[in-house]
Image 1 (tube, chains in turn yellow, purple):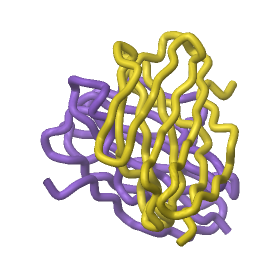
Image 2 (spheres, chains in turn green, blue):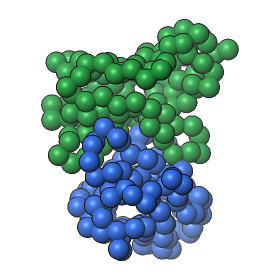
Image 3 (tube, rainbow over the protein chains, first blue to last red):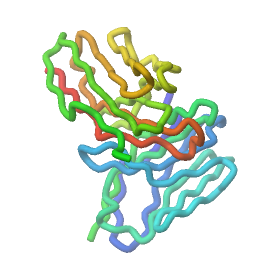
Image 4 (cartoon, rainbow over the protein chains, first blue to last red):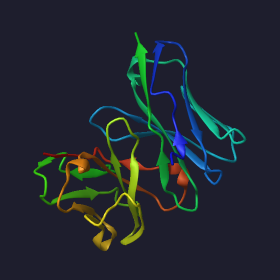
Length: 112
Length: 115
């Protein structure tokens, strides 16, 4: 039972353009959501979070949008840079547990 | 803040052998988590500790797996009688008790290869 889904295994974007990574979840109890970035041979690195009381959170080039009714979130990277090339995971948690469930990841390639 | 440290980084073992991994979390973090990641998958939850108490174990954690966190500091994950299906990256993470929005800080992982 995959509670957090990232249906696009890979995405290629031209440098300077917008990257949009999508994530869907099924558990309506989830109320905290995170995005992580992972380079090969390293652990995931925290990028940005959003709680269910908000529908948008921004941090520099990264913006996360949450649509609770659709159980959907997305990460926008503007402008995309070659150094953004990595695997991106979304993760969701029910604040009662603080245990995050991760999606399968989307490999982003930013082309110079 | 030296981050989350995991040892060893790589481990190759023969099927049937026992292995033990160590994780040193960020010192002020109360919670410690173990995840496993296989190729093409996201990290899968195994277990977590709040201080020294093990609060939840995933059904992925068979009887051959045991985790400890004595004194609420470092943690060990032991796998007994390893099988080829245990080959994966084992990730440790830690977090503050409050505020799920802080997320986890992950270590670099231990890559286990069972031959």
